[in-house]
Length: 332
Length: 172
Image (cartoon, rainbow over all chains, first blue to last red; front, top):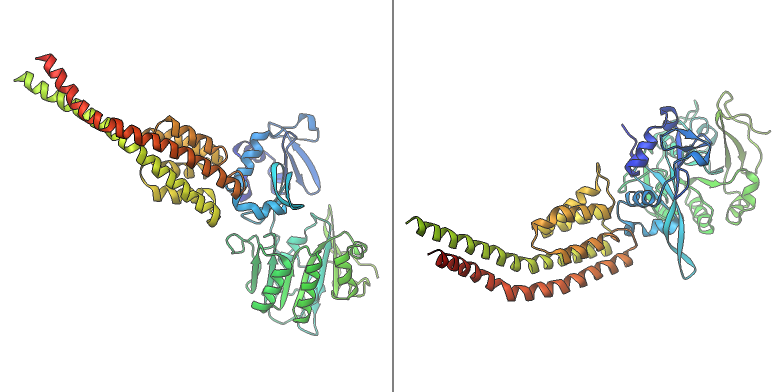
């Protein structure tokens, strides 16, 4: 059974990818296609070029190069032969396909009134393969429990791209929604979760229905701008926990403040490699100063797997509750 | 007696041939009109429905029906797995395969072939422009087809019979 992201590749490229060793194929993270340049695959932080025979090499000269026809065909398949249905996606620079896989695009932009209208002459593709890892949040969730209110703490998850933020919050949403807290003293039932999924990455929705298991008590607002979506959810879906991905704009901060006043717990993610990065970003630093978040989780991925560190709302390091988990000791 | 039978056969054959030819002249403008209407429906699907192309083509193919509709249905089929053709290739293949079943000529075929190059590959405004161009060109072909119909349809219908009669006279 081929994974569904293979369906967007033209025959030629699909056959090349299928020739990869199964161990590599199963761990593919990114497939990068750049017109006239070597076809590249990324897995576990390493990259390889593919040769015309399906072998792997680091030598760009020996690699298989894609041509204009390939990128045209690929684009046609990604957009379901209908670029005109993707105007909003082209403005944002990526398309999400069935299964929640995200395809980043690069090319020449067309401006209108100083803003990007859409991308034309698209020649660079980055197919990011989304994986559902049930249990990714097992070591993290017990750290985020709020025993006083039988709920979870306001949490901000920080990590650079490609470190599994989205996988983590998807699993957090699933476990909070189903009430599997992973802590012997946490005995309250699952909570109502609302996911605002601007890029269709968390739930991988197709036609409004989540493709991933996001839990039995979870509502998903798909493809909706975060700030607006959060407000809509608060007004209409009475969530107890709100999950959002990649906050960073001023209006996001406003909507988060609104959620706080409405008594909704928030779990959000942001790009950044550490706590210091936060204060240098205007919208986020305001949130930081207001002491909105009660817990910060900083993810780091190494060859051994995912590890994380915790900081509390006053930016003091927090020791982990349960040693023996993947996460190593935080600074005291 | 045998000669008589032969004469009847000859006249019947030529008359039939004349009718078939006349029918072609009558069908061509009709089918061009159908093609134009189909493209206009496609325009609506693209502009207001945001319908993805394969679905839109199936819809207009079913609405148009006949040999013209079949072309769109084949094109939609070509776009899906296992073929996974580009929109351009899918439509061109469908035109090549299905054009013989229509009464339309190469002028219309060329217009559709050129139209296929831009199908689905740009934003809505651009698509609209290309559809409008194709429709305009088809309308001028339709005009010409109607004139030909007026000129030749009746002629071929009677010419078949007359030609048969002429052969019979020569034979006797």
